[in-house]
Image 1: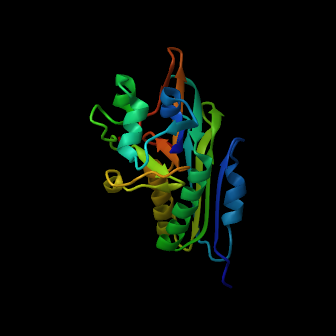
Image 2: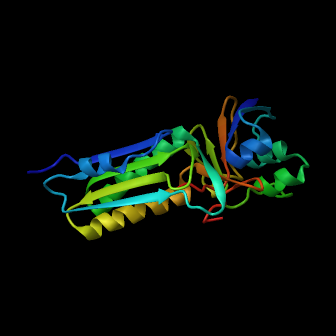
Image 3: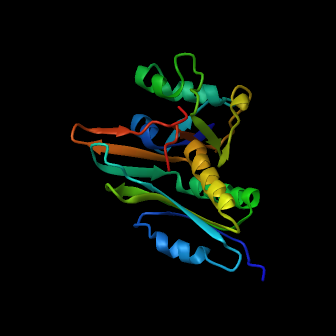
Length: 92
Length: 140
């Protein structure tokens, strides 16, 4: 299945923007971020660590709706989903 | 006379003029108008870049402003956040809250800026003589 990933600010510079990712059916958020980080330590440090656990204050939204952190382990992506990855915010 | 309650939120590239919102906040029920301006501070930077997920940020600002109005009984709420390149002294964010009394207007304004800093997808990057850096979150 294909999902689209939008990134912003520091994540845009690290991962690129508007990524189209091909994933196995039923892949979850942890699988997605592990996939886009690969073995790159800089990417892992910014997003998910070596274990694929998304760092605190990173926000994940799917199709415009923020996911609760508690739902990360059980949420399954679907074909055509649009995922937004937000680094910790600093507006205001 | 009962005023229609009003909430206005904007994300914009051009300079912010606080006077327009202050004038709009005036009305027969508004005994107090509190204005908060977040300003580009000279921390040895030459400029600031502000980036947002505009669609989500606008929805968030709308929700936060409406919550503040309800929670603090505001007669008028105006929230305006700038994006793009800004220089020292320019307004990054403007919050104008009108209320019957000062306490509500102060509390409403504080509620809005704290929620913005906590969750709205907006980021700042500072440019200095040595290079550039993303500003870290107060909640990181």
